[in-house]
Amino acid sequence: MVEVTVRNGEQLERALRRFKKKWERAGVLREVKRKSFFIKPSDEQRAAKKKAVRRRLRFAKFN
Image (cartoon, rainbow, N blue to C red; front, side, top):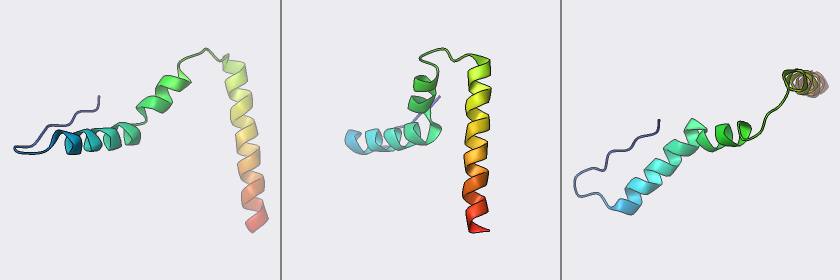
């Protein structure tokens, strides 16, 4: 859970900006989007394998 305490005499806009940065770094929105629909485990595995192959090919180019 993302939490920001407003410091004494701090402007609300500044605290809100700190909250937004923490929220983005924590990956809250990314997680919500990922969980917004169901993906079959077999499809997840297939996508992970595809991603790994692409990553290996990309690194193989530079070596």
